[in-house]
Image (cartoon, rainbow, N blue to C red; front, side, top):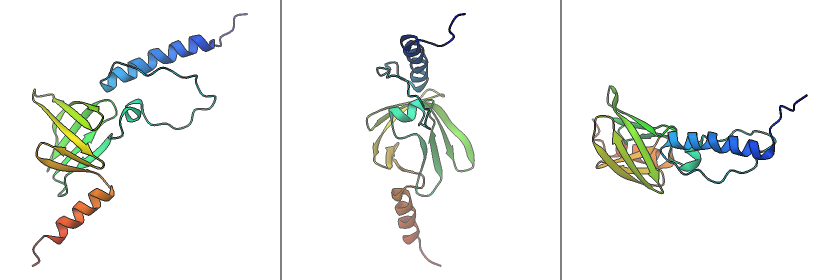
Length: 145
């Protein structure tokens, strides 16, 4: 009777192939050196989230522009009532982000903690302290009456 269990080497090779495919989907092609598989599988962030901490929703203080950085290396930007106004792929290197929009234009930006400087706008990680402060600051500068 043959054993259906993978050897440690076979398991690592299979994990490397899967990780390489996932990283390629994230927009990178150089996988980290694989480690031995843990005996238990705890909840972990996606591969792309492990590559950079910026996956999620980024919004302007007025909420008019909402840009979601998806874990698969794609973004989806809504403007006002227009859902998916801009879509494309992105890559993050350190605090720098490059965008390739599906319509053909390119752009870039820079992260400063929970603030994204992009296209002349400031975006805030939705729900962060920076976002709450920007929204509160905007409310305090509105004329009353």
